[in-house]
Length: 252
Length: 296
Image 1 (cartoon, rainbow over the protein chains, first blue to last red):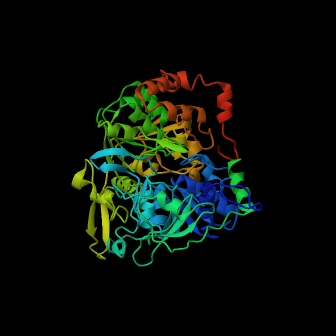
Image 2: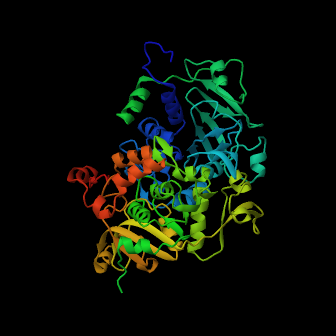
Image 3: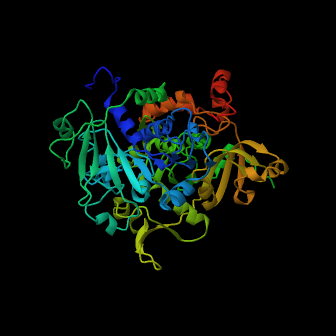
């Protein structure tokens, strides 16, 4: 990574977590629906969003974990939660009921409209390979007010979806609205090399910023679909010393 | 009549083709001892309805005991996930129907409340709606709401033959205390015909009723109780023991091949719970013992 002597060392993955964390505003209700988002949520609460209310799979509500959880439904996630409730409260009343402002999710194939495949490739009844995934990805993609997709940038992932597990903007335009899907859909794709948003009208993914040290050419080389892009794309704001310190502290 | 039975007796109730709900999720409170005993008793041909992110479910797939599964996706682990369910689907020995967490939960909720279906706004517009698996037309139905005209997805209720959950404590009469998040367990258990609760402690019923504010389920919803130490091991039981990374890492490393799973079976399933848990070294027991304030 290119950096000047003032900024500490960091990787593209670090900047992915930090960029996702930056999106979380104080008091926001967030659903952490992918493992990378656990770190982003913890970071946000230690930085600008100490009162962000994070929900986790399984009925974990507004907790403030002391240690980074290793995986799904880790007992560490329960620390200081307001209630130990059930999945249905979180996914039905809170998510489907409209309380979740942003859901963080990931997937194995992500297309230009932010549709996600977390199920398999090949025909459904004759799969070529099946994916491991977290069960609420369709629920979050369908029901959260907005979603943020987190994924490492590579050709296998940034490609057309063989199977749409979780709806993004479907076929673009107002197709998502016409399907009567509740939430607004994905607003950002945050990766380890660049950040994308979506065109307001046609809903195609659009390159917003490139992480320092990478070029547009390198970004496009890792994608099977070409995002919309201005000629000159700004750099993602590099992490400052505090952000790196906080991120590293999560893993120590 | 006492509701208490042994683990062996509980597993004996499982028939070939039984539709089962297994509780817990991810790293906490999954019925691992029950799954281990199923492996020991070679209970095959199972039809599971459960969260796919469940080590007990995955272990039954590794042991080739599952024939059908209706779940919200597949995958266990941390950092990296594996799925023996997926492996068996690819080998064509398991038929799968992929739902989402909410829609599976709503199916169990519907089953527990005696109505034939439940509505949800999940699944719409996705291939989970358009490309069903073995359930075909019976998987879900998108309809126009008769009141508002909006589109909703209807998912059919389900009543498993047997539901098994792990709890921290249970009264002699079946009153349940669970200290951590509940997952889908209350819906899953209540939807099931035979309802089994496996608990670290069986508590005198009078005593447990003095703490009614801690009780999450009355004994009316419980048919059988099993007292067993470390029944969620190697996953965690909040307030009692943490998950065992050594065991789980061996599982992630070995379970995805037949010879590897055999290795895992010899080291971590053994011939009985007494062999496995009864002989756990005091060092490991104390390492895993939960801190009172933290719960892990």
